[in-house]
Image (tube, rainbow, N blue to C red; front, top):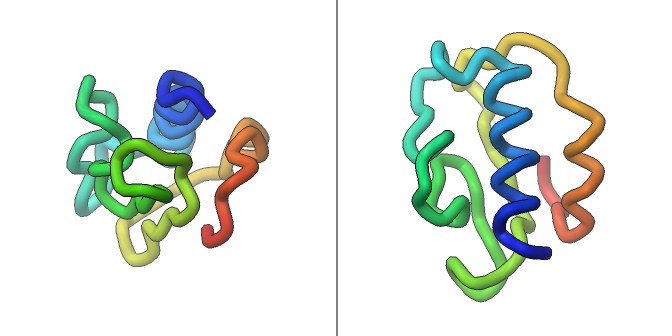
Length: 77
């Protein structure tokens, strides 16, 4: 999956879950590779698909957007 699509999904997630108020929102909505954003892990380091997202105990509020389903490689949420 191209990085732009993954970044799009995580930008939606950030906005839907009030990311501005998270305890740790390092990297979100920045031009850096999403594989180094807080709570995200990818296959093959920064060159792969997102397989892992862990944002528990991070002050998330709201509903996870349906677009998260685009992340076909995501194994842990």
